[in-house]
Length: 141
Image (cartoon, rainbow, N blue to C red; front, side, top):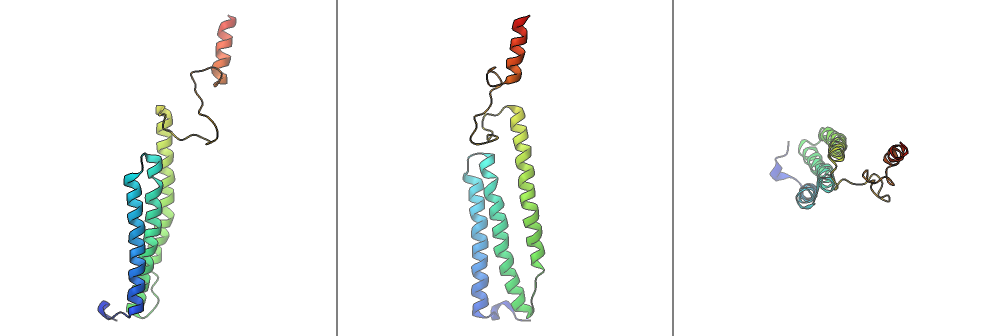
């Protein structure tokens, strides 16, 4: 087993490169979490930073332990698989829960169902067919 101080130069540079890339991507994701204005904008940046940042750090770890132990070590890839599988699922669950909560509360900042359509206003009869039908029934009586 090779001590870390005796790593070949090519391995040390490659490990440092992937560590810096992974840490940089995680840092960019955390800045996105801090700087973006609302929940729906914020939720995307940290998930990408987590996934890609973890990938860079895992690659550095695979290279380091493969060089140190003089054999191919791929145990760290399981961490990458779990992070890659759980992060998007968590993103979807959090965003759907927030969307449901905000639509029930009548929050005007909720993203539209389709970006090319205008939001429905339930207060005016021309935009709500059920309300328009109810109003015409009341006027006939």
